[in-house]
Image (tube, rainbow, N blue to C red; front, side, top):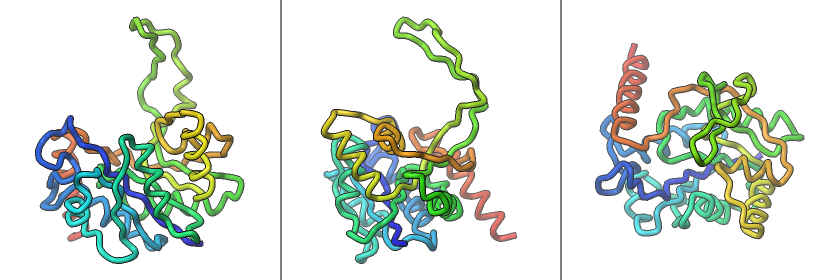
Length: 234
């Protein structure tokens, strides 16, 4: 089975600030995006990887991430994350049967987690996608526009979902095409597949797989990477 990955790095990172935003911010001596690309592409199940970048920074991001060669491709994204994933899908080879989508600002991902979503999808032919996440430890409230709580869902059924997310390529491409036709904006790729009737499964992932959005997040990621390096040396 041919499997590729799409790394979504098209955001401007305005909340983070600084030249290049969060993607080019250095953690543990290297840019966030480079850390993410290396971690994802270390998964032995992947044949290739597409990095979707901000249109004005394709060359800069490609150089930072070390994107070179026919198995590592950098392309310009769109105005939204959804459009950027669609741009990445358009670059996949025709024989790509499965695709893993991951946020470029989640550098704490491990090759094992990437392999886990791929294996779960491969082992369940009825599924169109697999997401990684963990059971919610917080009570979640549904709140109306005036700030009034209108519902408290049963926490035992709630999971906090992240990336990586694995999909059958045709299912994800069809879901994106349908979303574009019907003006659907999903909160993630799995929600688009779900809205199209596809079955999406979930696998347990690490809670520390955070997304770098602020400088505090970057400091946390740097500490985690330093700890991981120290453990490897022991």
